Image (spheres, rainbow, N blue to C red):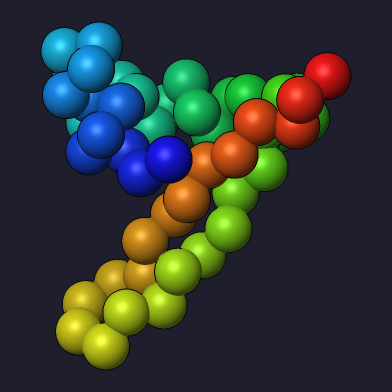
Amino acid sequence: MRVDKIVAKVQISKTKARYHLEYRVQTKLLTVELNHVKIGRPERLYKGLGK
């Protein structure tokens, strides 16, 4: 899931959402995949590990 979709659902700032998502990546609750687009920075796609 992309950060902007998460922000729209839970109504918190993009910075706060990224902080929490990256923490969950470090604790191995989520994985992150880079989606390289033609223009701009790559998107970070977060996925649950289904534990």
